[in-house]
Length: 233
Image 1 (cartoon, one colour):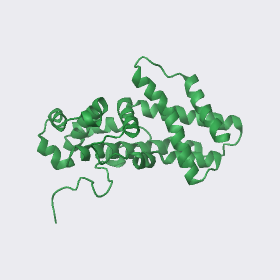
Image 2 (cartoon, helix red, strand yellow):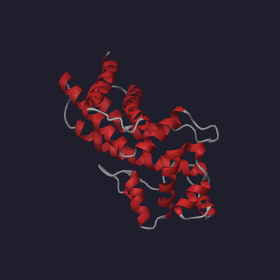
Image 3 (cartoon, helix red, strand yellow):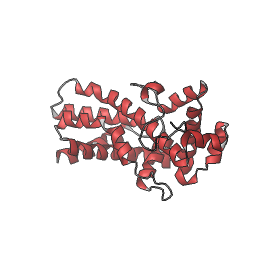
Image 4 (cartoon, one colour):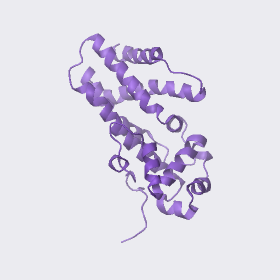
């Protein structure tokens, strides 16, 4: 049997699942990587270094040598653990999105405990969900922006360009909310989740363009009601 890691190239398996990260209702994947790195985990240290570089420079702008040097290891060591720059990027996405799915599941659960029927209750629940999701995105604005840009403009140099299946899997618990509130089927819920997250994500993109930009409650309500208008229209 080969002792060389397969780097998750055959299966989309994160090197750190939510349990290993200690992520539940709270706790960002970045904080978890910092903790694991501080405990001496080399893969966590490499992912943490990769996070800062990919977020700041985009996929094409990152040099493996820089990531390795910041983590205090050689390029061969990085290649041993992740196989390639693409493998490193793949694992960063897998780890972050797996953690996000757990956080979103915990975020959605309270809304599923009782029927949400009146117009006022629907508006309040959707606005509350938008605020909670926005708070989650703001925990790692730079990487969130990087993911959004990678989806919009995939790198021509990477065969791991299509992030949407990973993103949809990470966001899938939001579909439970759509089904609970609106009774939408699986395919329609998937479309509504993507529209909802795109609208909320636009606020993060604006903040990334202008660090002084402050997201107000009024803007969160506006985004929510714009989405609701489409759902209920």
